Amino acid sequence: MTYQAPLADMRFVMNELAGLSEVSALPGYEDVNPELADAILEEAAKFAENVLAPLNRVGDQHGNKLADAVVTTAPGFKDAYTQYVENGWGGLHAPADFGGQGMPSLIATAVEEMWKASNMAFSLCPLLTLGAIAALEHHGSDELKTIYLPKMVEGVWTGTMNLTEPQAGSDLSLVKSRAVPVGDGTYKITGQKIFITWGEHDMAENIVHLVLARLPDAPAGVKGISLFVVPKFMVNADGSLGPRNDLQCVSIEHKMGIHGSPTCVMSYGDNGGAIGYLVGEANRGLGYMFTMMNAARLGVGVEGMALASAAYQKAVGYARDRLQSRELGSDNPNPAAIIRHPDVRRMLMTMRALVEAERALTYYACAALDKAGRHPDAAERQKWGAVVGFLTPIVKGWNTENASRIASLGVQVHGGMGYIEETGAAQYLRDSRISAIYEGTNGIQAMDLVGRKTASEKGATAKAMLAEVESVVAQLRTAGLTELASGLDKALANARVATEYVVNQFESQPREVAAGSVAYLELMGLTLGGWQMGRAALIAKQKLADGEGDAAFFESKLITANFYAAYLLPQTASFADVLVNGADAVLALADDAY
Image (tube, rainbow, N blue to C red; front, side):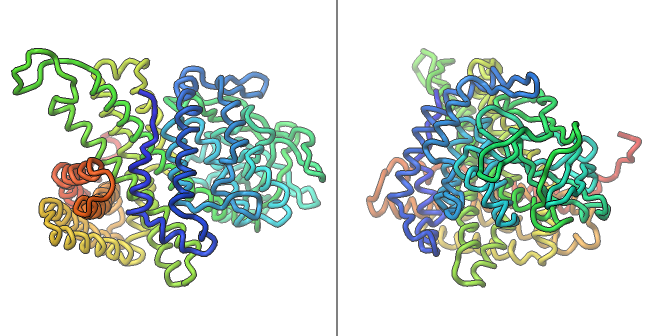
């Protein structure tokens, strides 16, 4: 089965749960209506299904070839990227001032889901470009914006972010790359960067690298890092491309998955220094780069959900076609499709329910991002900004933790054939594994959640969001959805106990709270996912009562929400228990006893 965009659920979530109408009411988005959103989604689905999806396995099998510092992408990728640019997809979410269409994050996220589900390796190139565009738009000089942004928005130039180095990992205070001023606002950059996604390729005319480096007089640590634009090819005064800059890809990483995406080791200044241009003020580069990283963290959450959705689709297709063993309790002696077997249904329902909850929570977060950026009322912008800040580590962490689990279930549904590469199920497992590591590992996301997003504000945003959950519990009871209400109410109680623990203990016992921080992230993901499933169930029940829309779709919504409450929400109790009572067991063993 090839990928098919789940447009019905995407439209439902966008309109009913994320609130497209509220986003459309924001200044600058008045022309964004359901009809326009539908048209964009329909066209994106065609591109994802007909152009990107057929190349997914091609990229996995062929990978990229490096010869004489030139990276040749997998067959078909360059042509697909040309179509991507010609169809204007690169500018969908980019600023209108530089040639973009300026669509809301909500719509851009739905489109991005399709790119990632159909071909994650390909999707990483435009994802990094959009992040680089955001960093330059917010922090670059007018001159840098004028030179670089129009071509990047058009897509004929792509962008990267060059953060870490062999000795640094996630600790960017250890960055050693150097930037020496040479006059006229230019710098010579030297150093090596690793894990540079799409750092070199043959799909675009130019590649605009954003590079973290230190000035000669920079203070130690993260306070001494500056950000530089370092183009692959120099740009002449008339906008044409000049000579090659002193930078090159010296190797491509041999990865577990996403083989179609070249992950490069980049070397700067092997012949005297690569020319770079300072972005913003000196020694503030890490803060500027977080503009790019925060957007990328939501994007990685989207990719976790998207890959899980694609793995679910493939598993369902196989389960419908695969005949094996008679159906339990049936008089028919013939083998049944394995979708009739209870444990296969357990796996499929787990995959389905988690994907639906993740999509709803992710789209909700992206709509909140739109409101935080454009709401005319400052207090509302502040409120929605806090919501985005709180949800970002959850969307990134919870979605990507689940991505590997869901893809693994997809392999399990296939049985032995899932372990055979030709079915394609294993690729989703391999491709999804990086998402829990990208843009700060999930342990880092969990520490951000318990420290900066919960304890530091005495749980204000967490408690406000849990109050929203409580409101939905009450509505579910009123609507007669008592089992769903009961399951969500128990999860709510667990989330409140856990939040109080984080608020009360983090300052005095940070290591103990950190030991259970991932459990807290998962608990909040499950609970807030359940909140969205509860909201979906309320809407579905009302639609059925009113005789509106596709009855089978809404009945499925109710069934899936009930499964989520009965089968998944009970896990919140164990996560809360691990957080509150499990720290000693984590921290007790001496270092030399491992």
